[in-house]
Length: 432
Image (tube, helix red, strand yellow):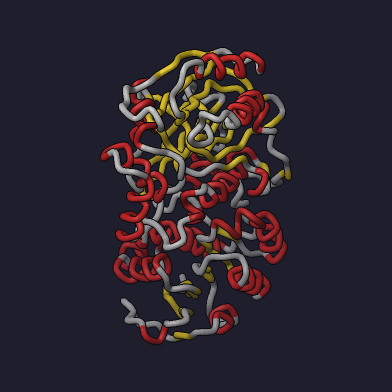
């Protein structure tokens, strides 16, 4: 069999990690495939100043030199974003090249139409590295549990946020201090908004929902909250309730609709997903027939994500060699239906409400009256003793109720003059 030739656009963390694996693991890859892979061309703005782990015939700063190279069979787009990256992907498909991408943002926004264009051109789109870099979750949903019908999917899909929450819980360190340390260590970007506000995890959830449920939802339609308001005291109260706090991505089929959300939530400590700490990622699926399955590993990094990219390249190389004209959908479903997620206000959960107040008589009674007006029942009231009565934290947990009722009640309570800051409302996911 002939060698399959590759072009790589983008030599950042993932791109260089992929190049390293292709060089250092070349013999094993050749033995698995039965033929060699050869990197024919690479593109990066600083490519000519880099030292490569292998000989590369074409080194360029113009991605068009890679895409238009007649010898290149597969193009790996590893630059990220939705502008230049989209041009690279579209041009590669138009030129008859198979495409591998790790670009969660691009695929979440428009992956279905990219796949349709690839199918019309007779080439394949592969995107395993776009979610949970070190976990082959695309292959699991597309093939491994394809015979099941997924009812619920939970995920911890952002390593930066999970690292921050783990450190707050472990050391009792305030959020801002942990974030600064994460930035110093390289776990968090200089502008960390995509990670700590949930936007990165939201893109990943949209992708997983397409594979698990055969639907396309706009990322902007997913209920999303970040972790910046989580403090050490929240973990102390969560521990009293037998819980921890995670930035939880949730996709749940209920009736004819689908609820999608990304937000911090209390989860019981005795569940397997509660043990996912540090920068690790995890996905938990519950099927109608196969029940629960769980997948765990590194969510990012040069080599874990590079393994996913390389594995996609190997899969496409096999397809090329067998000349299989029928391309398998990377979304697991032949047709992906555009949907609007169910309004999150309709979802019913128990709730955790944390307040900071200036203490005085009658506060609990005032809050209980608001909750009663919204037909919400109190489950418990928790207060850790504190000498500072001008900034006193305490917690009310609520029995199962519709989120819309909770949000309305919290909004009304936020107007009380004894509030030091707006109340923090977190769902309690007890059904994991």
